[in-house]
Amino acid sequence: MNASPLRFALTFVVLQTFLTGAVEVWANDMVLADAQQKITRAGARVSVTGSTENFTGQVRVDPVWSADGNSNVSGGLVSFEPGARSAWHTHPAGQRLLVISGVGLIQEWGKPVQEVRPGDLIWCPPGVKHWHGAAPNSAMTHLAVTGAVAGKNVSWMEKVTDEQYDAR
Image (cartoon, rainbow, N blue to C red; front, side, top):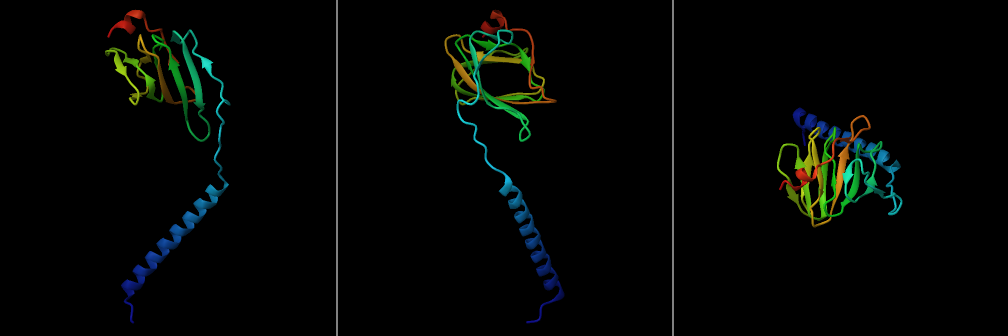
C-alpha cells in the first residue's frame, strides 16, 4: 500500500498529538500522585458565639474550612435563633449563602426584606451592603461561602435596627 505524503503527514500529526497528550497526562498523574486528600475531623473546629458587635440575638458560627493556599474562600455554618441577625456588612469578594434549615430574612441596602427557605441560594455581590438572619418566629442556619481580598473577607457596619428588621 502506497501512502500519500498528505496521509503520512496527517498520521504523524495525530500520533504526535496523542503522544504529547499522553506525556501531559503522565506528568499530571505524577503531580497528582504526590497530592493527598486531607480530612479534618468533625469536632476539630471550635464553634464560636457571634459577637455582640456584629450580631443581634443568639448566633453560633461553626467554621467548616478556612481560606488557605489551596482556596481563597472560607466556609461556615451560621445558626441564628429566632429574631437574630447580622449587622449590615459587605464582602470584598462577595459571598454565597445556602439556606440549610429554618426560615430566614435577607436585605440588600435600599431594597425590601426578603424571606429565604431551605435550598435557597443567595449571591451577595462584592461591596454590596446587606444583612441576613432568622425570621422572627423561626431559627435559620445557612452555609456561608466567603471569598477574601488581601486576607479580608468582611467589612462590618452598623447594626440592623428593629425598624429595618420589621419592615416586611
